[in-house]
Amino acid sequence: MGFSDLWQIAFRNLRKTRLRSTLTLLGVSIGIGSLVSMVSFGTGMEKNIRDAIAKQGLFTRITVSAGKIPDLSSLNNLENAISNFDSVPEKISDSLLQVIQNYEEVAMAYPEITFSGKVSFNGNEKKVTVQAVPGELARDDKALNLHSGSFFETDTVFEVILSYGMLDDLGLKLKTDEKTGLSKEDSAKNLTLITPEEILGDTILIATAVLNLPGNNFNPLMMMASRSFQRAPFSEHQTPFVIKGIRNKEFNFSRSIFSAEVLVPMETGKNLPRASFNNVWDYLDSSKKNKQGYDVLNVTAKDMADITPLINKIKKMGLSVFSFFDQFEEIKRSFLIVNSLLSVVGTIALIVAALGIVNTMVMSVMERTREIGIMKAIGGAESDIRKIFLLEASVIGLVGALFGLLLGWGVTRIANMVLNTQIMPAGEEPVNLFYFPWWLIAGAIAFSILVSVVSGLYPASKAAATDPVKALRHD
Image: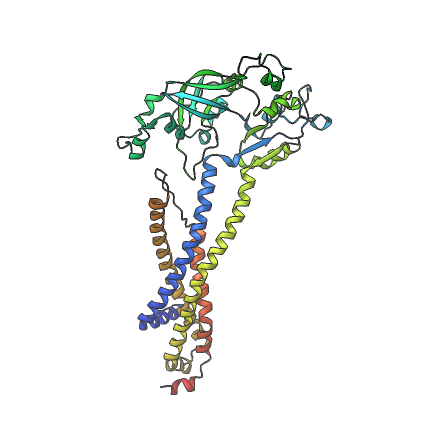
């Protein structure tokens, strides 16, 4: 008996019992639909996180922290002499920064310089964190993520880039199109609606704290106890800056690589008058006060393939390295566990559907006992009869999988719409929380057919083992 003949017999038998076959198909569809819906949620969350990290270029970025490293400031051959020194300052010097910048895998390396400040604009004040960044970041579109304006042209200009989120505290709301307006919440905050062009080019004041001490050996405790000391230990130093750009609004899956609300050019930030310690204990600790250098470097590799060799080179210097590339491998393992748990829950419904397939096929064998006897009497082989019932089961699995995928896709579309409209905070960009990769679609179809075939093994064997004599006598 040819394969096409077997298919025709299988489809004909399924059409004879439309109601029962339809109910069995529905069970398989619901099982596959629930399975792919749950797994697509896990894969969707993983994809959103991966795309957000890739969009910001974090896979090629590493953070280098100061540790026990050699002081190479007085050496000619800096890189080759690293292992020959016992001096271990806990700062990264400019010389060591230059070594890292010269590595062939490095596209960019710069120190992380942040400090506290206070901005004044439009009659409003806000305490902020200021970060100095190099102008060469203008070449990195993933890092910029500007809403409007442009990046610094040089590292010495007095220009700033503001975060979108701090505009509210300055009493402003950007009007990006004709539909943009003030909500009731915005009106309650007394925000002023402006276009980006109205703020770009304006002057903003940044105030930093400056230490007022008469000498390097002056004791701050004695200063506070002395009545003759009339000046306050700190004063504000205001510096005017021109607003050059505004960063995009941050959403759940589009966080910026910059933690500071205000960005200034690198050299301008370094030379801005300010207290050079983070707290009074750093000032009182002379060992820390006399150390020059940086605590953290931000390093960008030319390509993802350069990450591992670059990390190994930097670790040999005794520096601590953090990489999202390594961390994402841990994240992927976590999502694998989550997807496995979701798959188990979804598979339960498919197992219930498999029991329905067994029931349908057993009933079919009982109803077609005489037909089976006739086929065997005219020379039908047991293998052919077994194939007929296995094909019927596989057809149920295939068609059920296709309808299940459509059901799962439709349910996830509705769920995604509800989640985006009801749960996501106002103003957030819509996020696709479900993802159907090709392997999930192919795997769902293959798994459905496999479960259906396994469910049909017993009925098929029962049909193949039927005694033709008894079958022909069957009423």
